[in-house]
Each structure stands twice: as C-alpha cells, then as structure tokens.
Length: 281
Image 1 (cartoon, rainbow, N blue to C red):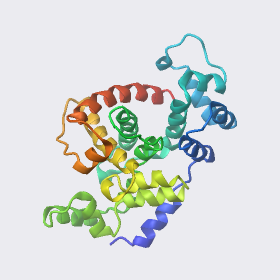
Image 2: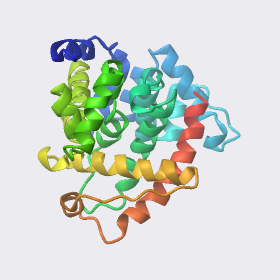
Image 3: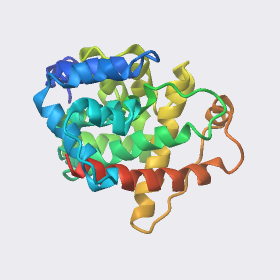
Image 4: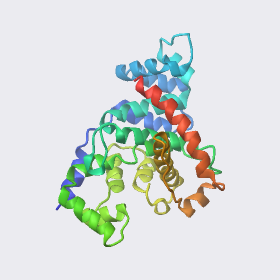
C-alpha cells in the first residue's frame, strides 16, 4: 500500500516554480497591477522574454510590425494575456509529462490544463458574479496532483480503486480517498501551498470536484472549467460527453439556462487560438 507520508513528501519535492512565475501569479491576483510592473519583471527573465517576444510576433498576433521589446509586447497583447501566457509558460514543462495511471499520454495533461484555463476565462462572460483573476491559474493547475499521485498507483492499487468504484459505488475522488487517504485534488493543493501560491488558487485546486465545500467562487469556476474543458476536448475529436452540472454551482455563479452549451463553443474557439500561440513558445 501507499505510505501517505511518503506521498506528501514527494509532493513537496516537486521542483519549485521559477520565482518570476510565482511573482506573476501574485500579480494576476492584484487588480492594481500595472503594465510597467509586468515589463520590469519579465525583462530580467531571459527565457520568459524570448517566449513573450516570440508569441507577440506570432501569426496569431496578426501584425506586420515586429515587436522587439518586452514593453511593446505587453502593450500589444494586453496585461492579462501576458500574465496568462507567462504563467502557462512557467508550468508547461512538467505538465507535459505522461501519467499512465490516469491514462494520460505525453502532452495530454498539458492540453487539458490549457483547455481548462481558457474555459475559466470564457466563463467570465456568462457568470453574473465576478470571476476572480486567479481562476485562470487555478484551472490551469487543478490536476497537478495527478503528477505525483500517478507515480504511486500500481496495478494493485488501481484495482482497489476500481473495486471501490464498482462494488462500493464511490465516485473516483472518493475511491482515491478511501484507498490512499488523500485524493489528487488535495495533493494538488499541497503542491500549490508548497509553491507558495495565493490561498484562493490553492482552494480552487483542492475543491475543483466538490466546490460546495470550498466556500469560494473560485472553486465553482474551476469545477465548471474542468467540465467545459472535457467537452471542448471531446468536441475536437467529434465526440460529445454527457455532463451534469452541480445545481449549487449553477446558482452561485448565476448561470442561465442552457449556459453550458453556450460556454463550450466559446471556449473551444479560444482554446484553438491559444494553442497556436503556445505552440510558438
């Protein structure tokens, strides 16, 4: 069986985020963040500067005038887009990993993470309550716990989890908790805490499957973004999955009738656009 202490220890050993990425995440939570503050930070990170200039000059930016400085890139793309791009660039390397225990090939977790993040962005236009800016990062990182959890899921443990689902009628998250004493969402929250990410992001990660327990709208948005992302990914290969939205989430976000079917196409268009930009990094 899995030693819970060893599992948590491995979570804490996951390589820390680059300092500039953590600072950018903190900036994204600050409504008073200014364009100059972002440019000042990015200019001293060579790798991030290269990625940002490459993205700003990509075909997606649709401009024939080349961008040659960070400040020009921030001015062209906008504060929030630069923050989102920089944060995603900082976490992309480890989200690309294979996680066979969860059926995730190389790049699958990254694609779902990006789809979730853009779904959180798209949801803003449909919610009647303000969506916190941290929702992008919470959605992007909501499944980070699978990176560590997946290393411990042997065939024997996977069999026990499957039995808990089939025989005891537990949902996947509850089955993980029963067998391992912790689930991937809680483990992801531990990782986010270890990275010293803002509290709201930690909350969104921990409660992305059971948002009613989180006590924060970011939990509802991260939950919604995860489901929208799954529908977006299915739609890109010509499939559609059945989704049942939590009524509490619908009420707390002030979502109108049939809103899920409206968010999915908007998120799908945005996902295709953003994927092109990330592919240029």
